[in-house]
Amino acid sequence: MVAKSGDRRELFRILDAVKDPEVPVLSVEELGVLRDATVAPDGAVEVAITPTYSGCPAMHTIEADIVAALHEAGYPDVRVQTVFTPAWTTDWISAEAREKLRAYGIAPPSPRTGGDDELIPLLRRRAPEVVPCPYCGSEETVLKSEFGSTACKSIRFCTSCQQPFEQFKAI
Amino acid sequence: MTGTPGVALVEYLLRLGDDRLVLGHRVSEWCGHGPILEEDIALSNIALDLIGQANLLLGLAGREEGAGRDQDSLAYFRGEREYRNCLLVELPKGDFAFTIVRQFLFDAYDVLLTEALQQQSVHADLAGIAAKAHKEARYHLRHSAEWVIKLGDGTPESHERVQRALDECWRFTGELFLADAVDAAMQQAGIAPDPASLQPRWQQRVEEVVAAATLALPKTGYVQRGGRDGRHTEHLGIMLAEMQSVARAFPGGTW
Image 1 (spheres, each protein chain N blue to C red):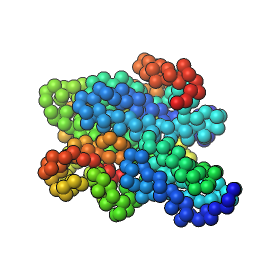
Image 2: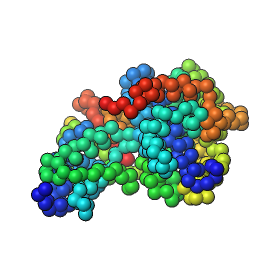
Image 3: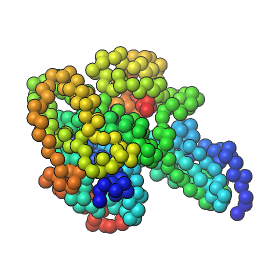
Image 4: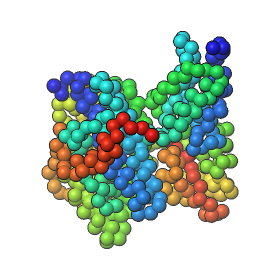
């Protein structure tokens, strides 16, 4: 086998081609799913990934895509390990990646709060969160459901342009 | 025997995993039958989270046991008496009110349990799984609690159905907070909290939601138990027969 540099940056550059199958504008690195990639003493590439949600069905595809991308780049031995600590958070999605999401029609996640006050908003009568429409920019949008087409998204509706859209849930 | 750390740990992980697998399966029975499309999707998402958590917890239980059983063999090739879930989660899905009330009672407990495990457990893998599950449980609780309030404080029909569901579920909630030798061993080892320590905050949150929903808290203090020891209601065996039928008809099958 041709000796590859095995540089971490080189590995991340190769893995930049691996996109989230359900949000194909983001790479697994931009999403925060790709945690690490290194070459082990035995020459195998060790990749660490973390799931967005416990039951995220995209993880199998992502793992297979990572192995395929590295094979194609000349790394025959690849080990993908799933790690759970620290738990994935939408805070890892960069400003640049958030803009890509918005341009794709998915509202980026709001900042995370996490206090007990937000747990059952109906009890607290809190003002609803303002989420601008990714299509027209209007702030006149309403939450339709906390649960959308995938575990990581909620469904909203824009009352200005009458367009339903999805938002990445802050987690 | 269940007092020794290794055996107790496997037993404890099975309890955590089985609660989520069985409840996830019950919730998944709504897929394609939800009262509205958004709710169908929401329940399927919640089921997916719970089954995902079960996958991780049963996988961990299998590794800790070290007897070559993985999450699939634990899910599909154990009989009803070997399941360790609490009775609350195995009750049939009932009407939408029942599903929502049962979910709310469990979610309120789950948020507190996963928070305690995440913050206190010395078992790094378990704490990691709990940290992830906690984020999901918060969304579940928000969803189920708000439905309880909307339905309870809704029409006479929805109010009556939610009250009936609450009355039916109540005697099964005490089991969540009962501690036995397994729990004592887990607490001693710093792996898990004493379940009884979660009850006051659970009770407070449930009472708050029940009041906002204009419902009456059931008066009975009777606690129906048995699930943690494998003594289940007549409903679990039937559920497992369906859930396990394909895996048992084609052992080791893949697609």
